[in-house]
Image (cartoon, rainbow, N blue to C red; front, top):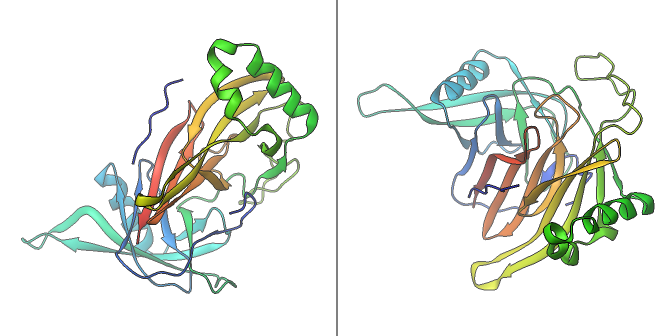
Length: 272
C-alpha cells in the first residue's frame, strides 16, 4: 500500500508535553468537527484550520452558540470559543480561527492537549493490550508468507513490543447506548514498533510504527506512521481506531491517522 505522508504511553488518557511557551500552536484537520486544543486550565488559544472553510464556519458557529465539544482522549464535555480574524476590509477571515476550550480541570501540572470533536464518540475508550505470544507468532507467519513484500520489514519489526487495540465488549457509548458485542475473532488493530530515526542537528528522534488489521484470522498491512501512538480515539464510529501519533522534534509534532478505507493522515498539531 502506498503510504502518503504529510508534514507516552499507549493508554494515556491525555497527551502530555513539557511546559513551554512560544509561537502559537496550530491545528489542521481534513475532517470537519475534529480539532486539537489545549486542555483546561491552559487558556492558550490554538489556531485551527481546515481544508474547507465551511468546516471552520461550522466549528465557529458550534462553539459560539454554546454547544459542547468532546475530548476524545481525556473524556468529558467542554465549552469552546472561536475567535475569527478579520480581513483588511473588515470581513471575517475564514482561513483560521483562534480556539480555546474550558471544561474539567486536569490534575497534572504539565501542559496537555487533546483532540476534540463536536460529536460524542461511539467508542469512548479502547481495549489496549500487549499482543500475546500466539498473536505474535500468527503475525510472524503472515509476514513470512510473502518474503518478497515483507522480508525487509520483518527484519526491523519489534514483534515482542507489538500492541493490540480493539473495541471493548459491553461498553456503553457516549450517548448511553451499549455497543454491539464484538464478534468472536472480529477486527483488531495491531501496532508494531519499527526502526528508529534520529537527527541530532534537527532535534529529531522518532520510532516508526507499522499498522496491521486482523479480521477473523486474516491480516492486512495498512502502512507506517512516523512515531509512537500516544492514544487511540474514535474518529470513524466503527471498530477501527484513529491513532494520535507523536514524534520527538524541536517543538510539538503530533499527527492524527485514520484507518477506515486505508491508512491516511487526518490532522496535525504543532508549534513551539
